[in-house]
Amino acid sequence: MFHIADDDDIKSGKLTDIYFERTNKILKAIEKNPLVKAEIFLKSFLCGYSWGVLAGIEETIKLLSGVDKISIRCMPEGTVFRDFQPVMVIEGKYLDFGVYETAILGFLCQASGIATKAARCKLAAQDKLVYSFGGRRVHPAITPMVERSAFIGGADGVSTTIGAKLIGQEPVGTIPHSLILIIGDTVEATKAFNQVIEPEVKRISLIDTFNDEKFEAIRVAECFGEDLYGIRLDTPSSRRGDFRKILEEVRWELDIRGFDKVRLVASGGLDEEDILNLRDIVDVFGVGTSISDARVLDFSLDIVEIEGKKISKRGKMSGAKKVIRCSKCFNDRIVLEDRKASDYKCNRCGSTYKDVFIDAVNKGKILYDFPHAFDIRNRVLGQFKFLEL
Image 1 (tube, rainbow, N blue to C red):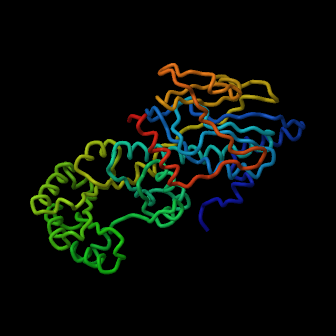
Image 2 (image 1 turned 135 degrees about the horizontal axis):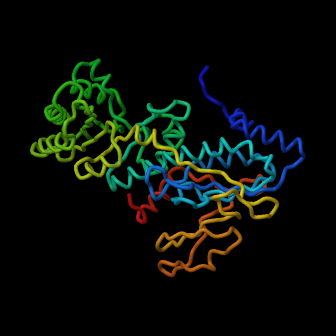
Image 3 (image 1 turned 90 degrees about the vertical axis):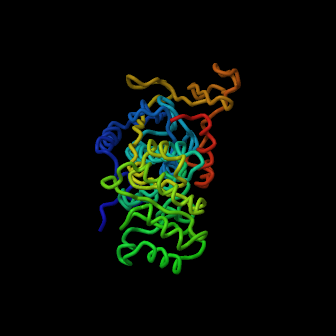
């Protein structure tokens, strides 16, 4: 019915680029199936970033774990990485996994792009909340992946029910313009929400449907008092003018009337630059398109060893490698996989390096513990102290 692939399509290799199918056909015909090591890395961040957040690891491992004799070493999901650093090494007979290259890169490229954008938004927001509101901007078939990637990247919550279920959280949201339009008044619509919806759900009123934001904010606050958690401004750009000035005016009017505890929630086409500009006045950011439509990260998968011989294409360094990292200053180094991290001293602070890579799959057996999305998110947030926008 819908234009989507299911699990069986992915696992059977039906989503591969045709040249991989033809490669398989040729190698089988000439009876050649060497043991190879293939490395996944990123040559550059085309959007001007200096770091990314790795996501899509769980799906990649689940895809390849059923393939006999395949081994995977990789960075754990939620690890910050830089350009030219390998994030995963796959070892096995080429014909056993080559047909999955398209799917593997699809898993990693898009999920990592979304997680990276979410991390940048959360880093910009600092202690202010960031909610992912972008479910409506993507094909519904991939909504769970988008929401999970946004959450592990740093978003404090997601809006869709299926996305929230996947990460083990309650969905977040306010009320839509459609409810206010149908009821005919902002205060009356908020009253209906308050009467019907469970009390544990935060009362946030959307105030820009009919009238001036300042006067609607005052009306709602005077009606609900301390029961009102926040007000949301989703003012369209065509009517917005200076969004910051509108927010400052609303904040002023609420504060002088004693409603200083009412939070301001901003949404509507926001990006990290907007968050940086508004974080001193806004308490909660609803970010949609800029997260869900984040630019993919252009990972490549390249053979770096064949039957133990170090070999690679032009522009790629031969030999399977890994990343070692100084836990004190977050300085990285790329070394061959058989080198010990403890043999190196950080050239920046003199501390000892530690391995970033882990053994995720060994000859088809999963070793990765598939951490909860909340734990992956904590891993990402814990690296923020080393990062800059």
